[in-house]
Image (cartoon, rainbow, N blue to C red; front, side):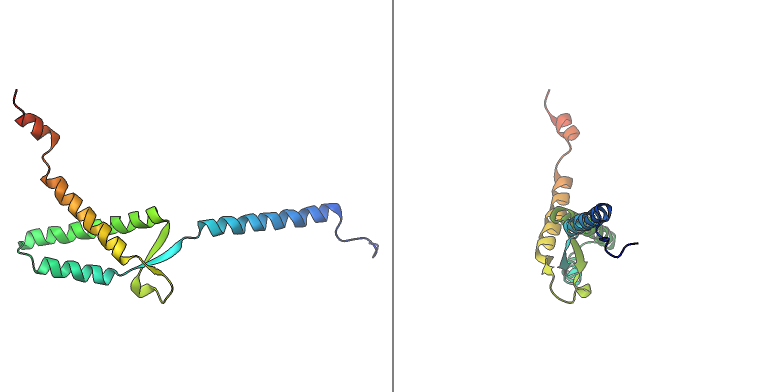
Length: 135
């Protein structure tokens, strides 16, 4: 090989530019896919629920049902919050610093979801309304 021959011949230059463009594109795509991390104080949320349920006059069976409903609803609300806000939700003990606190928003969404479930149970079904309608 002649020492005077340039290393950046047309094919080599094309390969270097292609790799550079692919690298920039991958970095940009990765940047768009990275989600912001928010924190959620699950301990505070559970403590509040435990206090409410302890102060209630529910039977043990209804108390157990409420705990299960709370747990299912909490999971779905956190999942929906993460999806709607394009974030990753981590519990507060996992966060050292720097994450936005989403606890109040998630707790409010949880209360709304639990209340909506109660309201849905109290609404008569369409069939029962039709059955009661005068002819």
